[in-house]
Length: 241
Image (cartoon, rainbow, N blue to C red; front, side, top):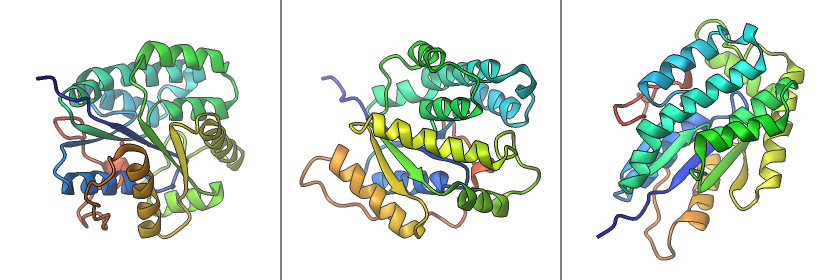
């Protein structure tokens, strides 16, 4: 008897949008329904991909230019898919991922130097048919997001947090353009609202797009007080950005 493929949910958006918090809430709600859930992130999500994450966010790759950065993101994504995402989906687990391929499109696009066709070719190589079933674009004004990111930061800004306001405005536009171009996959939710309101809006999208009619509703509660911040989120042995 074959096992039904799991579902793949990604959360995207600019710095400080609250994606990591909302990813944890989705995972908790799905687990509350008795489902196996793998909570993961990009860049990262597998041991080797986490090492690439450190190199990217430290700024070590930045002097090599956006092409090299995009290729490093792709290398991390291939390892992440091979060791975390595809095995989980194959055994019927749901995967909730904090950032995925849309972030490469948006961030490298906001840097302004890469041909979108090049980014698309990297996507085809890296992800093939492993396209998310649902992508939540958590939208927030760039200045609000950067203020939040600054408040939560414990140390110097990372490679992308250190970019100026024009970059983050362009980043927001890029995410919204992606969502508008793929409405069958993407849902835009305002991240400027209270976290509980954001969580309920996201869960409504999950129910409408992915859950069968008549399934019991899940409780979308507050994340556990011990849940780690984005920059320090632990990666589990099964891949749990």
